[in-house]
Length: 67
Image (cartoon, rainbow, N blue to C red; front, side):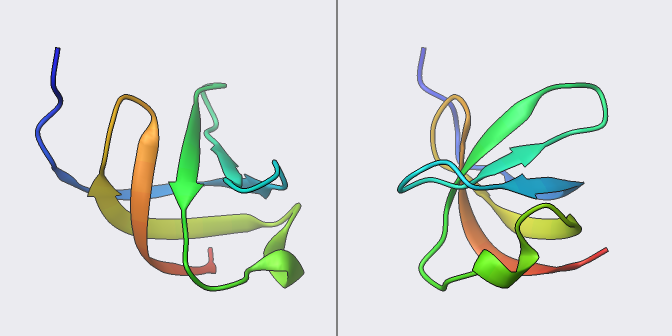
């Protein structure tokens, strides 16, 4: 089933995970993040991510900021 690109604004904990960082949601769900910029300084912190869904669990990131 193809997922339509939809805009999302999500808040969770940013975790390191190889080429695709992970956003862990408060409910335990996770999104893989497709981010062009480096956000290493935010790993382990609560962040707000804005982007477009680009697959089942992949979010093409437009913006990441501290929440």
